[in-house]
Image 1 (cartoon, rainbow, N blue to C red):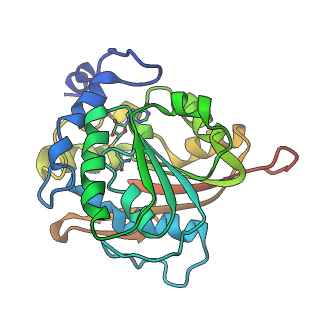
Image 2: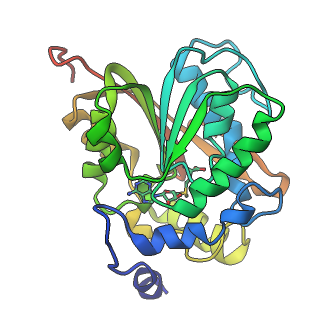
Length: 272
Ligand SMILES: C[S@@+](CC[C@H](N)C(=O)[O-])C[C@H]1O[C@@H](n2cnc3c(N)ncnc32)[C@H](O)[C@@H]1O
């Protein structure tokens, strides 16, 4: 089975550090990404933890687990956020509804179109500063260096071939003192069983072949890569999917899914 999974995502790259087959795979769900019953609805559900994780990483908040879909505030007003690999914008929009200026980029034109379509509908009732572009982080950072207060790479590094090069470009787009948030799947036998065997093949929470185990990465490895890129990791937190009632919950155990928050140091800062 593993060889079949690997074969599906075999080498077919045209743009640097982009697995074109992987991008096509996600593009196939473009029209249903925002649906309550869509194949990737789990990404929207994951906002229950990743939105507060990001929000509370950027500001001090007394209510760390609280977020409901459609919630609006000016909490993140003044923050410029880049959502790298934004897909159809299911995470970009909630951050925009908190008042942040959000730029979402994704290599898939179809997903950017889906993101813009949904944004137009949201703008009928809400004022928000969100824009989307179809490009890779490598292309984006050539134009915008040290521009953002925060970079989000949520559920993307497990789809990127050269993770270190990807993170390097992300950090180049970040201002010194800014925050990077990475959310992804840990790499161990338990995450393989939960995220691939159970989620994709037994429970059908995700479409089959969404993930390849070899692409998973431990929080320690992300932390080490970011340290080499002059970033200090300040928080790693786990979460779990309680699939039977569509809830995500924080937990200290990071063995399956986790979020990592690191700060880009000024060049002179020393840390270990
Ligand atoms: C699982 S989706 C996550 C989408 C979004 N971040 C979310 O969590 O809702 C992975 C996304 O990563 C994008 N992607 C894949 N390779 C990428 C790369 N090298 N740079 C940026 N985005 C990439 C895909 O097009 C896809 O939209």
